[in-house]
Length: 102
Image 1: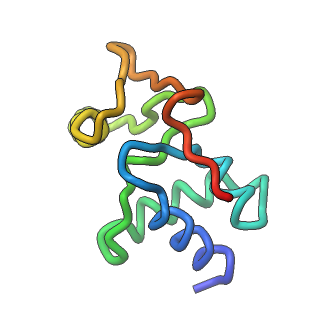
Image 2 (image 1 turned 90 degrees about the vertical axis):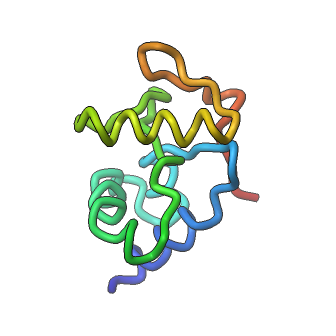
């Protein structure tokens, strides 16, 4: 596992309940601001193995971005269960719910 992948996993595990981060934000925090797609791959391939809160990661527009309808519904359901408001079109208010690492 690369150091970047290890850092991505560490960051995602830290996202608190009721908050979200974007793919690009995680990539920047992990040291490679141009690697948002790599964050997607890490989530896709390692969420189960590392018990990652994958549902707390969204796109830069503040929108749910999973194309699979069932997974998209599951993400919405999990976020709403944590108190995050998701609009009918799948948007989340980043000013209110985005988590910034200290």
